[in-house]
Image (cartoon, rainbow, N blue to C red):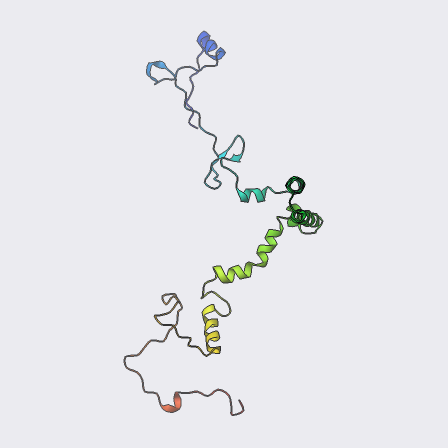
Amino acid sequence: RGMISRRRVRGPAGSILRCFGSQAPQSGQPNGKWKPNPPRPKVSPFRYDDAAVDMDSDRPLRVHNFPDFIEKWSVRMFYNCGIAITAGAAASIAYLSVSPVFAAPVALYWYIGYRDMRTTSPIRRNFPVIGNIRFLCETIRPEIQQYFIEKDSDGRPFTRLERQIVYRRAKRLSENEPFGTKYNVYETGYEWTAHSMFPTFVPEEHRRHLIGSSQC
């Protein structure tokens, strides 16, 4: 890998070179001088957020951000952060004349962490306090999907456009929208009714079909 071949030198000259840790001059070099290749950086072929990974330390060559902080969260970090914020709250109350109500979030932090470490959920037990963010996001996932991600034509069994027609008709409003449609008319399987240049005559008795009986 980018290393030049070495010539083995026998005799006293080879002993002197090996003694001083040098190498023999390579054939083809001008003036018989050997030039070592520049050291190649040990970089992993894998990339992490477009940053090279140092093979010596096996750590990404970049500053850690908030997602890394969540990934490295543990019970030990929970205790360390708890002690830090408890000391900060106590110092603020004692020396800065802050209201004791300021200690309520600290007490809530310890209570949630103590409860999470004794639950059966592995996420809460391994990531006290912060693990609850996952369940919070899972709770509001349908609302996020409906209001921010889902398109007007993606809903099942009825799309949002179809529901809007029902809502507007229930309020006795017009459900018609001018200037075309929001559907992809070039999509495979799209159905529509084309106008006929020479319409066929349909008798009056065939224009309407009654469904049900007189008891409906």
